Length: 200
Image 1: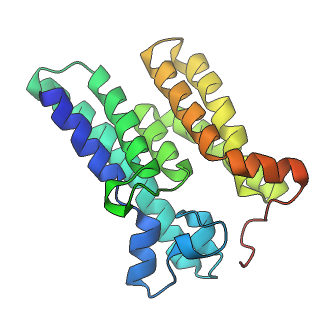
Image 2 (image 1 turned 90 degrees about the vertical axis):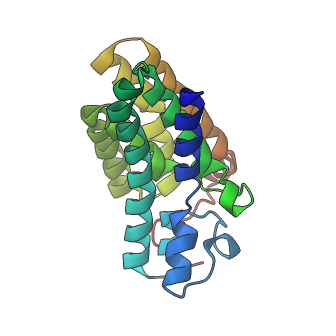
Image 3 (image 1 turned 180 degrees about the vertical axis):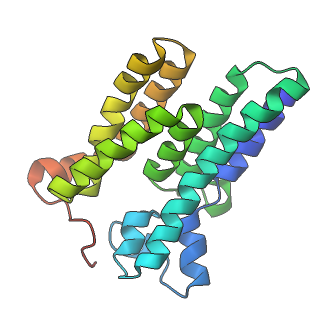
């Protein structure tokens, strides 16, 4: 029962869509109503408000990190194994993708996945962040950067921690993230994907 409570709490944390929250607080259009329609930092950036995009990115990443770290800190006090943090990692990520507070219409999970990875292993998170920044700098295409990073994340996890429950969790997150980017894959193949910072 306690494990289920941990998972439910992580899911609810993940369901906080900072793209929608920040946009509403700053008087911006709902990010689901323009551009890619994705409630994420990249789409918020299309409004030209860099501060709003930065707050969205920070909030979405922070919720992933908080859910994992809190689970790790509190699990021993409730007699739970460390694996509960992995379940919470999946739950907070699922919450972002399918948020109960926003009719299950969530983002694509890039920032939240990064926060989760940093929570699981800071070196893993840094390796993924470096990969995303490199790809974004060279190609200036958010989805390409995210997909490349997601595909490499399980490899980084395996190199850092070996094959085990953590790497399996990272692999599941990768598969979900790639699935959420299926429309972007089509645009990338057709050369139609937008650039970072482009207006709607």
